[in-house]
Image (cartoon, rainbow, N blue to C red; front, side):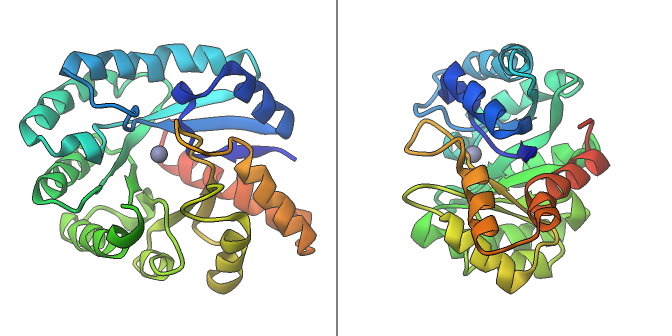
Length: 264
Ligand SMILES: [Zn+2]
């Protein structure tokens, strides 16, 4: 069955992983800019990273028939140094016209600090200025609920159209507030932390399958590039109809991305 991976950090993965997801049915993959496992020492490091996301990864993906798209920003973890973050943000507009760039992301919060929140808000302004959608990272574990609330309050003040915003890494205690406010909710499927396939399907059963998508993140940590299709299998084992599974793993991300970005 064909699917879209709406959130995968392929710069951390081998080419074998592109082959595996292509075999599993992946037609398109969206790669948000994020922390690389280490702090970059200069804005130039981000310049090179944005080139990697907009020039090299699309070529690597194309070898397996996968369309590669990117979201650009400075991630919340490296945004704690606000002066440094603003220098990096000055580079971003130069890349916004690249054909595979979808919008601004994954911005958000890491430790819920004031500096992170300021840079988050400046990214949302940048997205509004360029009429782009936004992809938002919510913090881990004990910081998640507070961080999600801070993000929701901030977005409300920004007046950005909720239907052009995806709030990612939702869990059982945050998904309802996200959907109720009109935002899209992303469920990140991880083998250990965040959300399992069974928990994701439970959430779909409770909160419905509108304005939700699932992703594997597949970053430099313990993660699984095939997580979306393993969740599709979980739905199949629970006797979901095929068109219902397809809605979550293909139609939903496509409808959001086609509406708000240059996704084809
Ligand atoms: Zn990510």
